[in-house]
Length: 336
Image (tube, rainbow, N blue to C red; front, top):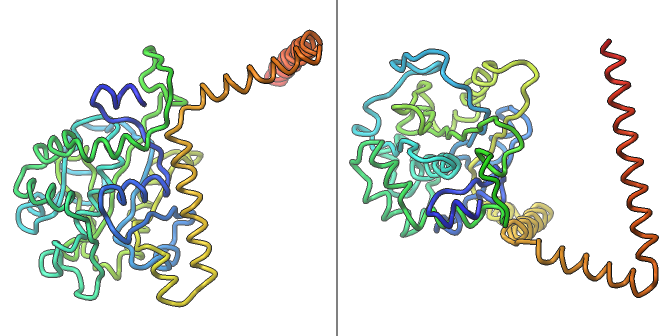
């Protein structure tokens, strides 16, 4: 929220492909976008190739055991950061997990992560992360995960870019944990990517990166599916509040490469829609709404319709209240 940003904190941002794509572009990343995955199958991921990883959003469940010696799935890799230069940062502040998961994928697939250090095939495309993120990554190289997380949380450049995508609101209810939340449920982002021919789960709330076994970038679309399915199976059958996004190459570039005019125009329309939606997120419409209401009231008074307009509104509200009460009574009778 706006008050978090003003206080130097991290605001809540939406899990949205347009938000995440624009966020990394503002950080200096080139030719990468996020694409929401509707179905959990390898072909949907492979169709977006090159795919650098995925970002998974889920309802956070408190650990069922205090034993942190091993994760619920996979195994901790305590040597990946030091031996293979894997970028991994502990989450040290609330609301930063989305951007942190994004950077976990981006910074393990950048041009500085050569095919030798990453274990990737030489033909696997790398990401141009720009000078700002390159400087951040170079500066934090060799840091332990907690210090790297603190450095990320205190990066003014990353924090301000992140906060620029928070929904604008002039109101704050200090009785709520999160003024934007619709419930008390807490949601969390994590990233999955390949590094040094290993499939890693990068979760800032875990003490180490989690290895899910051998995996080349080419095998990623197939091998990530059972990992995600096992995580989803931890939840009750009715739980559907998950979101999965692929981190892939700019699909406009792909359309241009294959001469697909229809796809290119579709992607351009998508970008225009993202730009429009992001501009709406940043705008505070309270003043605009007030001016519209004042204009409507002035028009009703001028036409002599104001009193009748108020009576009609009161009658409509009373009718809705009565209908709601009847529905409540009917539901109680059914339950009995």
